[in-house]
Length: 116
Length: 114
Image (cartoon, rainbow over all chains, first blue to last red):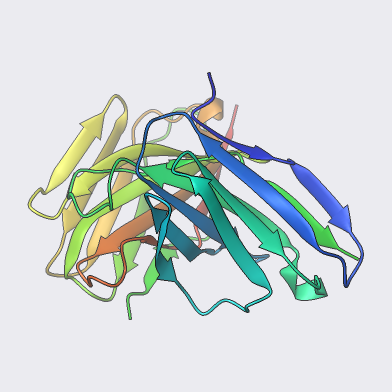
């Protein structure tokens, strides 16, 4: 009965490969997010989708392409992986667009990506 | 652009001590501020959420305060236990309509010695 789940948990791959990370939430939330946590432990927003519609797209290389087949899933596809893509990627969800002052986000366990 | 800073970056205390973690943010136009806990190899767990209209929130041994005008928040942990060892992250949700996501600090890594 995990609320927000991600697969895989660990991903080790070579430079130049294409990989995908999957995220699913069973909370019935409308909004999902992808965050990247770099080596300095800063978590930064990458994308946000609300009901399958992209609402936030930060300055992220277009090698990163999120895909939301339905509002319970938000997958992250990365083309031509680079060394600098090594990080922990967290998926999160919230009930709505997150504009309510008391609304929180629920995070997945993270996917640790290492590009060699 | 909102920036969040957490001090100290790391803290080690003996079991039973009371401690304070600090968070500061540059733009006081916020919806809320949250404190999260991150355990190694795991995701983030929300500990406390303070709405912009509130001054503090309490949950068990945890008390978080918010001074929006000065851009500061503190997380107070009473009678610390080894199980409190983790990284504590502060995050704010800004009123900027283009930013519905959270802006995080880099965290305080807490070690409670038995």
